Image (tube, rainbow, N blue to C red; front, side, top):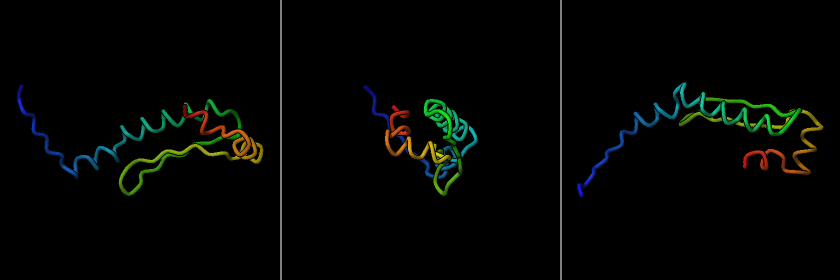
Length: 78
């Protein structure tokens, strides 16, 4: 067996975590979760300080009540 030595370059990893490709992957996952939640839920994707962030949130009063009572977003993530 050989010994594998891996050196990670921090700038390269940060560039990858902020890339358009990573944003597309996050948007895809958030869209799937949003579609499982039903009406009244929205999604948003942003490039943060260290990485791309995607979120799904209840936008209407009805969706907020539904999420509060049933944990809809949490269950849709499974």
